Length: 144
Image 1 (cartoon, rainbow, N blue to C red):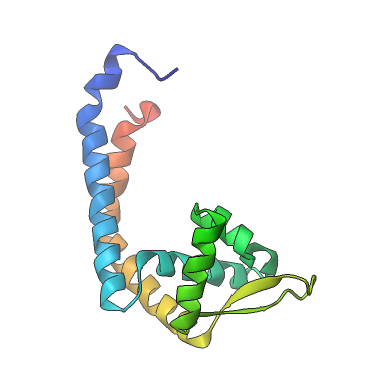
Image 2: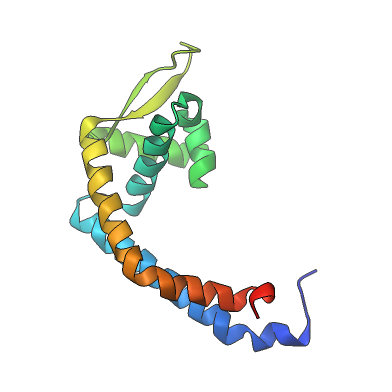
């Protein structure tokens, strides 16, 4: 059962402020991605693939693993990978440990775009993060 304490409703302004700060970041992310010719979902896909590549974890790049990580249904993840593949951002290759299935890899073009977008997002967060973090801390009971 949700917390129904009297102070729950009293924290509504802090929750609204946190959601506002989060939406500001998401709006920035969406417009930055659009300017680069990709969707936010494609950028999120590139982030997951880039992180898996850095950690040498190809098992995390099957369609099922990507769907789980991106909070998508399997068929939606397939469609996302299809669109990203047509855009030259990713490619499917045989799984090195199980040739019956495929894994998804980021292409050099996808890697370049990921580096560009990551830099832009980190620059934005360098200025917006204090307000975002502060709005979250205001919500946390231990911080009040």
